[in-house]
Image (cartoon, rainbow, N blue to C red; front, top):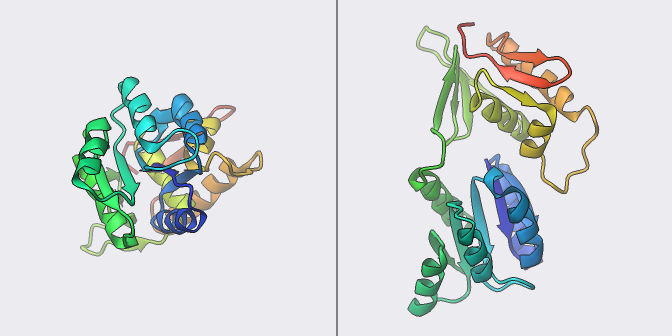
Length: 232
């Protein structure tokens, strides 16, 4: 799942960015409102959630919300702010925020709020995915092999492996291009080498095969990859 984080305080932004990545989210971090709008104006449909600080250089969080909702976007937005007056909260919610978190806050509460937004949003895809004998729990960020003997061993995945597998499983039997995968799995600011997707697919295949989940990811030469829905 891809999150746009808009926070101009360096220490807080780094802490949130680190926490989200530890939870296997893909994060694009913008430090002012104008930079954030460049992300949103070109690719808001690629994001699952957004976190806006209220007070930002350039466009404020409220202004970002107004512009986003003017595009008829239903992207769930969590507003962060030091403003704790009731009228400020009302103003944020009326502008289109889905939830409101007052600074200072704990990272555990932030993650809980994000999980709640995922459950409430109609655009969020199912939390449980299964193809053949491979199951993915998007909520708990875990994968397991359905062995059929009552023992379902957990498959240990890196952040990138989980993100790649989640993206492919959400598009079963569909060809996804190398560029689509790169845009979804790596942050916009990441410096990636040309064959990074192929290398990541090889690592993921090797790990799945070691758990008995073989022949799931098909290479479509010259185009990209396809996750096969059929029986293994």
